Image 1 (cartoon, rainbow, N blue to C red):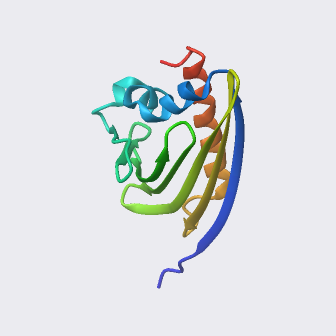
Image 2: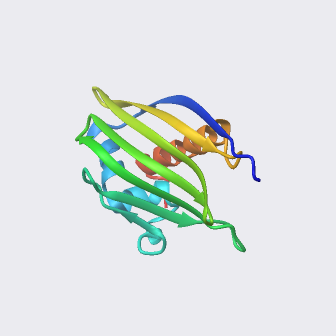
Length: 155
């Protein structure tokens, strides 16, 4: 019998981006921009990355190092208020193994020409396949990539 484990945890990341809130929100909503910072490049569209940005819509990202394993991110959007809030749930898989299930909320706060982004994630990490520390580190890296795209340095 395989011993199954469940770990629940939450993390919050706050960032300030030196662009208006419409630009930051747009980088989450536009498939080409989102692919650049979330999937690595706009070339990912159609090659394992999909974005249907609407309530009830889905986002899928597949990829991994040469030789495997293939990691899959599958999400669904539950609440979208333009330039204010996005709420979504997502599952992470390594090949066919479910690693985690999470709910995330991204809030956008307009501060003149800058934007404060607050991302809160509540995760269920399954059977030791992932940890909150690994997930938070990965999310911080993605938000760094978002900054690079917003500043014109992303691919």
